[in-house]
Length: 623
Image (cartoon, rainbow, N blue to C red; front, side, top):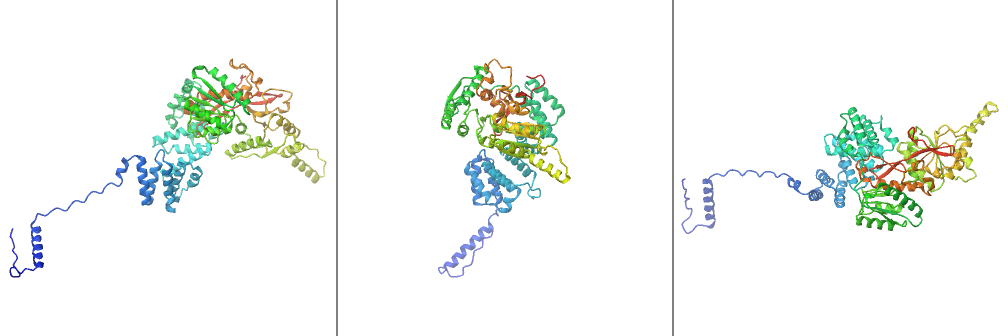
């Protein structure tokens, strides 16, 4: 390397500071120029964005994404944060509220798209605001450009959940049937959908189950067929034989994947043994009712055998606070199951308990939160629903309803009309009467259309100038009558129906039409009326454990209810796991609706003949 020495520009000792600096810079440039060249540094690899978040606990990850979305509220970031929150099991109320706020602040175009509405609806459902979820989900828009198979599938799934919450079992089943074929590649989701589909078959009333056949995709018919076969099989051999026959006809049906689990539930076995706590009003205004139920519970307890643990009885005195306190102490003491309480307000208070064990509550409550709780009831509403269902199965679709004024009539009318509305039907007319009123005959005649018929006869006579002899006719748009009330009330109403020549119309009533003791002379006017009731009231052969005849008891239906409550409580968890099972009891045949936790009864059916009720639903040769 050649060294270059710069020539001095001034005499020695007279260099200026600027010149020395210049010399230094020049020397540095020469040294750098002679150094070995260095390669350009390689650019650092781009870090995977948020790759480390996947390794964090889901709760932490969701919180970080929520914070990021708040500071950088871009649609993609917001959607990612909301999905992270919805994936939590469960998300905290604060996380859901923060996610909902982010969704509400999305641009209108993002929020109002099908995918955006679905995201908002899922958030509302996670917060159990079902009305808001329904509002956000809105109507399905096939022209929405964001529509995709995944969005459609998730929207249909949420739609099914909303229908289940609303108690629209038939419509929910339709949604689940349509959804099932979309989940073939999602084994976990497919299995969950089939479990809920099976539960919906149990939730349907018999007439609704029949209506599925022919009105849904071919898979729907096969689902109903399998359900009926297994429900009718009372032994494991019978269940296996029925399943084998069904499988031969439907070898590729998706329900084949459920068969091993369903068959394993046969025969139905009692739950694990343990003490049973009974909470009933044995004193106070409901004391007589409570003691009748306790009588039935005790009979069934000894009939079942003592291997199921002790029977512990406590008096709630009909007080909701006392019932809730006794329930809480029972849970803390470690009892295996609880039966009761009975009063509606007590049941509602117990249903709100923080802790629970498997329980059969003896009245309906607004909402049952705990999976361990079920409700069992004999009330006018249950009868009204049963009447509507049986009429539909018989093809009677246009009722004229005659009900007494007052709270009883209000309850029956509400339940009956709601049941008809589920099938898009309504009564031709609902007439409220005062059975002791003097104008009862005119009121019933008017409801049957007699004045209108008489007016038409007079008009024809006037136009023709003839003297016509014709009987007024009952209105032609009615195909049956539903007359509810106590036995004395119905006895006052029915003679007026006969007087106006409407006896040809089928007549139905609730169980209240029968006092529980046959009296052919007193009930002669009730001939032809069909009503649901407890089969125990009509059994002529009594089991050995029942010493007293039902007709000798003051409240035979509630004795029967107590018997059924004990038997159901011993098998509640087994039926919950396989809801196609039914239990034959003293008040009827019981099945469990796994969605609202209600035991649903298929009652016995009787008809007054020669003044006495006779069973009409027994097989040939039945007693």
